[in-house]
Image (cartoon, rainbow, N blue to C red):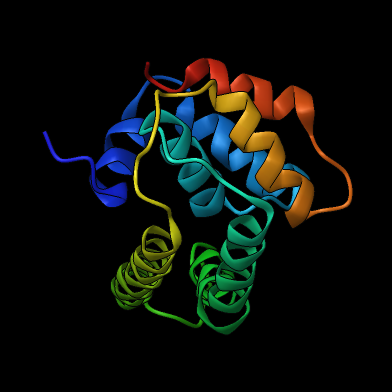
Length: 156
């Protein structure tokens, strides 16, 4: 089984309750889902994170977020609403295209994050430790209850 970040993240995101926990962290607390999944992946694969690596990962996520992911997400969400002056089929087709480009941008972000991760050098660690460490650098307020929920829902 591959332990690439992308493959691991797809499996993790499909686990019961993970998508909901991630979206609550994204929309409710301003967290970056690919960054949080990267943190969990490093913990699951025994990759130790130091402060410089976490800061570099946050810089990478911020750059992708500002340049592509957030603008695409905003556009995709705006296309979800029915508009009487726009043909529904055309609107939905465009929304699907924007969604695909948004996913591509997230995949590029995730490839950048994977490149920053150190090689595995130990045993897996509890998810919550890595999630809190990354969230602490990402935002001023660490949403511990929501991070705990995510950690509990991620597959072992």
